[in-house]
Length: 95
Picture 1 (cartoon, rainbow, N blue to C red):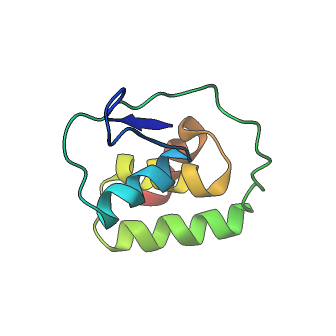
Picture 2 (spheres, rainbow, N blue to C red):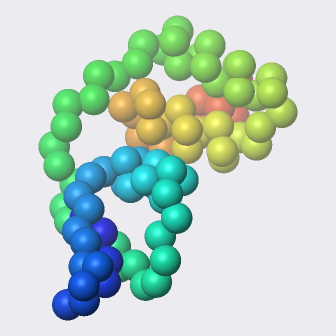
């Protein structure tokens, strides 16, 4: 949720995931102060990516010259696995 212009004429509340709110800020200019209110994570069943799919994604991202930490962060986000598990896998694949 992102409240804007609280108690003012242009008061606005926007709700969404962090990704949706980030996209909103790219799509439109927001003037003035903005407050971001975070709530507890919603339990969303993220399917876990297979080892083979994860390895292909890791190899592709490393092949683009990306830093191992950045690769691990991104792959963890889309794979449904922990950052620690993915980072360990990235380091193994980099060798």
